[in-house]
Length: 227
Image (cartoon, rainbow, N blue to C red; front, side):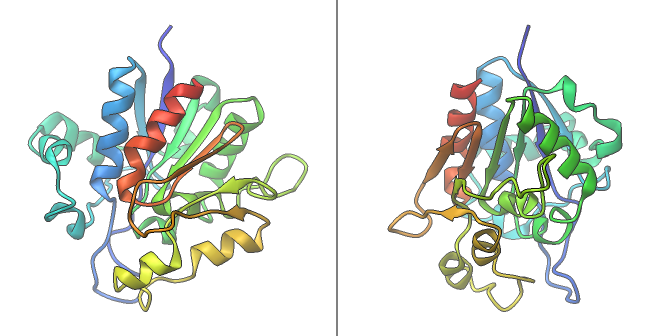
């Protein structure tokens, strides 16, 4: 029976309180989708509110806009998937072997306090399924607690989009919080590559995290290896 992956995307299309656009960083989805497709895994898209997942404009420009992202946008059936994402309350976590949480700055606003996503993540994690997150996707893990009330991130080795990368991307004045610092406040053991924006992923048991958009393929490959 094919393994089943639940991919999580954002519903947020702009930085709160501004007209500055953001959304899903498309290649973080497409790189992982390609890896999982090659393994024959079944994939489903979910978002905190269901429905449309808007695209981050910066991800649709060189050098971020690669052939996998272009192919996705050129495929009406694939684009329809991003218009019709499931809601968490429509998802039975028992149907999935792994959850893979994508990024883009939009997730900083709607992932952390989504109780539905927290429930799914906790249930998959606690029964030994794989939890993966790339780039800002780890914002979806910040407030996720386990059945004993402890933070999922506490005492675990992770990575994610760093504050230095926020500064280099010139969005440090737009983001609502420092995700790197917030993860450490919850007990995470945060790691990062010596050079910003290079591929880097960390595996701790059944938790896999990637640092930035360029880490999506590596992160998904490590998730697939665990499955």
